Every structure is written in C-alpha cells, then in structure tokens.
Amino acid sequence: LKHCIPPSDRSAIPHPLRRPGTRRSARPMEDEAVRDLKRALSRQQTGERSASSRSAGPIDDDDVFLMPTRRMESSSSLPALVEALHPEIGRPADIAQPGGFRRDHLQREGLASSVIVRRPLLPSRSVLDKFLDPRVRNVFEEERAFIRGLDQPTPRSPDVHGVVRGSSDWQTALLILKSTVGGTLIVVPEAYKGAGLISASMVMILIAGIEIYCMSLLIRCSVKIGGGSYGQIMERCLGRKGLWAVDVSLVTSQLGFVCTEILYVATNLPDALAAFKSTLPAWMLLTQTDVLFGQMILAVPMAWIRHLKYFALTNVLANVTVLSALGTLLAFAIKGLARDGPAEEIHNFGPQWLLFAGTSVFSFECINFVIPMYEAHEKKETFVPILTKTLWAVVVLFILFGGLNYMRYGEATVSPVTKNFAESLSSSSPLGRIMQFAFAFASLLNVPLFLFPASIAIEDKIFKGQVPGCAAPGLVRKWSKNMLRTILVFCCTLIAYLGAAHINALVAVIGSVCCVPLAFIYPVICHYVLLEPGPVAAALDIAIGTMGAFLFVLTTVSAIQDWQ
Image 1 (cartoon, rainbow, N blue to C red):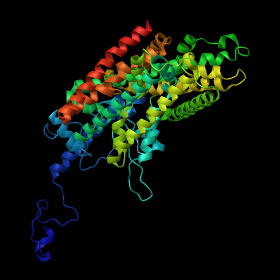
Image 2: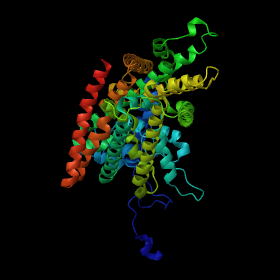
Image 3: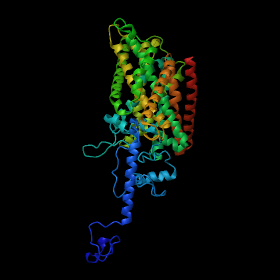
Image 4: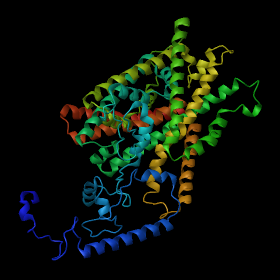
C-alpha cells in the first residue's frame, strides 16, 4: 500500500512502533517486551544446549545416519526453542524448516507417529526401506547414491547446461542387470539337473513373467498414492501390519542372501586350496566346515562397520569379479559343447520342478529396487517397457547359463558349477582354481554388505527411541549393536552349515519363504486394495496370490523332503 500513496502524504502515516518525538530510523524499533522475551529465550536455549553438550556421552558412529546432513542457521529473530511456546503452535525451529508445516500437520493427524521429535527433519517410516532402496541418479555413481539415499531422494547431478536430469534408458537397464545378475547363477545348473532341461526353462519363464507383472502393479500403486516406498504402500493397504510384513520379508531375504554367500565361500575355497596340497602346510588344507566357521574371523569385524561408504570399493571388486567369472564359465561351456557335444543322460523333464521354482524366485529377487529405480528414471513412461525388456533378457541369460552348463556336464553337474569347471580343465591349468578363489573372495566381500541392511533394520526396532548420551552410554550402545551383528553372522553361518549338503534345497527354501511374499503376494494385495481393478484383473490378482501361497507352502515342504 505504501507505493500507492503519494510521497507527499507518506509522512502523515502513523507508524505503530514509533513513539512520538523520536527520530525516524532506517529500521523500525521493536517493542521492548518482544525484545526482552527474545533475549530471555535465547539465553535459556544457550544454557540448555551447553548443559546437554556437557551431559551427553559419546555419539555412536552409526547414529550419524539419524542426523540431518545440513543444519539450518538459527536466526536471532527466531530462536530455536526447545520447549513449545504453545501446544497448538509447536516449536518455531520445527515449523520454520522446509516441509515443516506439512510435518506438523501429519503429526497432528497422527500420520507420523514415528517421527523423531528431536530430529524433525527425519520423519522415518521404515529404516529398512531407506537402506535397501538405492536412490540412483547416475549408473556410475550408484554406490554413492546408495550411501546418500538415507532420507531424501539423492540429489541428481546437473548436466553441462545445469539442468538436473534423471537416469537415462540405458543407465536404468544397466542398473537392472546389476541388480539381478549375480553369484546365484552358479547353483542354477544343478537345479536344471533336478528339474529337467525343458521343464526348468518353462518354470523360469512362468516365474519371471509373473514377477515382471507384479513389478508393474507395484509401480502403478506407487503412482496412485503419489509415491512412496514398498513398505509405505503396504501400510496404506493394511496399516502398520503391512509395513511390518514388508520389513520382516526384506530382513529375512537379506539374511538368506548372507547365508548363501557364506556357503559359496565354504564350497569354493577348500577345493581351491586342495589343489596346492603338495606345497601348502597341513594346517592350511581346510575342510568345508573349517571355512564355514573360520570366515567369521573376517566377516564379524567387517559387519561392525557403520558406514556404507567403506563398502564402495569392496562392492565394486565383488561385482567385477563375479561378472567376469560368470562370463568365463558361460564361454567355456559353449566352447566345450562345440568341441565335445552334449553330455550323456540329459533329462528334459525332472521331478524337482518345485525346488526349481523356489530357486527362480530367489534368483529374480529385485522387486524392492523397482520403485527407487522408477523414481530415478527420467522418462517415467518408458520405465516399464525398459524393465520388461531388460528382465526378459536376464531370463534368456539364466536359461542359457543353466541349460548350457547342464548340457555340458550332464549328470555330473554339482553346485557350485565352479567345481565342474575346475575338473574339466587339465591338472596343469590354474584357471579352475583361480575361478574358485575368485568366487570365494567375492562372496566373502558380499557377506557384510548384504548383512548391513538387515542389521540396521533390526537395530532400529531394538534401539528405537534411544538417543546417544541420553538413553544409553555411547560405548555400551555401540558394543550392544556389535554383539547383535555378531549374533546375526553366527546364525547365518549355522544355517549355511545345516544346508551345506543340499545347497539347492536351502536356496529354494529362502526363495519360497522369504522372497515369494515380496514378489507375488504383497503386490497383488496392494493392487487389489488401492486400484480396485475390474473383474478380470481382480481374478488375476487372486490367482497370483493363491499361486504364491501354494509356492510358499509346497516349495518349503519339497525342500524339507529333499533335505531329509
């Protein structure tokens, strides 16, 4: 309004904060009562901060994940109050932050009950979702994106023109390949032997088709609710029980991956060492049991690491090693078939197709990465076609790798297939032992990395609400978490020891119990509840959910029978 009044009349406008007879200043004078209140509150806040800093114990390293990455500078005109001015107003420091009014509304409506009061910038719903979902914006920086994806989406790097863009089509395709192609392939050839060449391929195509369809359903559900993690989508459908169901399935599946990696170390390293029995001392010729429990000497201290950034180098080494080894195994299988032809006694159909179904579900377990990859993708309309084409390419790779290696070694095929590869080479060739060493090395590096998300999720439930220096001393808290991670490593090692004689049965049980709910059951529940599909789509949801329930039960029973 000041600009609408002529300059000649502005001097006649009374100022509410100017006393009669005082000089006009550049800045209006504050009311004395307001100024005194600000000073008192600032002194109170300063005293409480200094008292809390003196009384607080050492901060646990992993509690860095609970702290905001950037602190807002406090303003002298708006002190960061510890106590609320009024219950209906709340603390100014909480409101005067990006998203503060929205968080305050969610708290009032009871939609953010798990918000940490002393850290208003972190309205965490499921710590597991944050650590399992790699917030990728560039395929060459995905490890750093995985580290930074703790609360907010990972900041995307601007291009040469300063425009922030998401991942391109080929970057997303490479990420999907990296998420699905791994060391599990070395147990697929023996699973082909039990299920048969044709029936195994048919089962894998069926399982992959259903999983791809369920991934597309999950993306549609995420779009329907305006974005959110897997756990948040299930929470919208079933409440807190849905969130807990997803978290439990994700934790158990991660622990299952740890069990298999421990077992891959124990099945490769002893044979590789046995090749040097003439030159190595007797104490270095370890048995499978020795390697199973002996690797805890390295796995336990590595599991105590609190920051994902320290796993970046080991993760790259493990990925490069596994992919190179898998390519070598496939190339030598093709070379052997071209030279010698297929082995004898190749069965097209076999009785263990249920076990193979569990193995297939375990192999394609990547549905928890779908939503973050969709959010990181630049052109949302092209994501589902890219996901579908890339995963079908992965299916072809799995069928080629499993089928060709089974045809190469026939009834002699064992798990892991690296044993067959080493035996097929001449005794003077070191390549077979190098391959076994490589897989053992890569699997040992993967053990603490795969354990990290599960341990973080369990610690979040056990130590929930304990603030460093307040609820428990920092040293006691840290070693309590170290003990928990040690127990998890020991339990996974014990499970691997029990399943060492039947690797395919163990993988099938993990796939059916831990991965089937995530891949089959939960997505159709979300689709049925949130999108309210028509009769045909609803019937398909019910059929897939029923099939998932049958796989959950029958595959477990079949694996237990094979175990016995």
